[in-house]
Figure 1 (cartoon, one colour):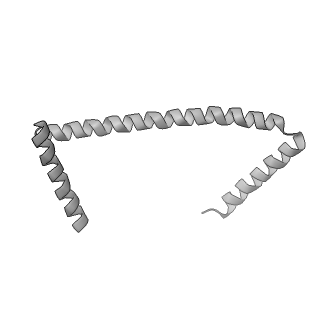
Figure 2 (figure 1 turned 90 degrees about the vertical axis):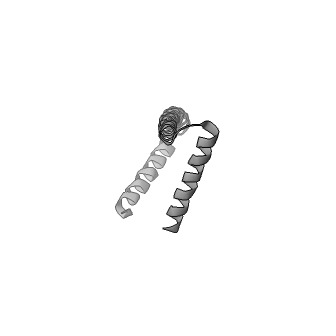
Figure 3 (figure 1 turned 135 degrees about the vertical axis):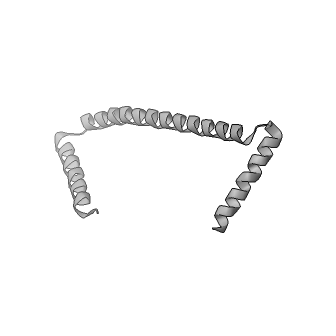
Length: 94
């Protein structure tokens, strides 16, 4: 409980300092903070989506090159071991 009170006190002090230097009222400060957080969430979501897309593309490209370089017997063994590991994880995971 003490940490929450200290955090609230620090946040209030930060708001007071911000008002002193920017001349914003508490409502304007809160609105601008909310807008900033909304923009940050939007940008971070866009970056995550972009990184996932790049990962899928590069992973598929590298995986295809590795798969074509392996012989059929080696590819069957790798595929079989991978399926076995996934099955064991599904059986023993909670």
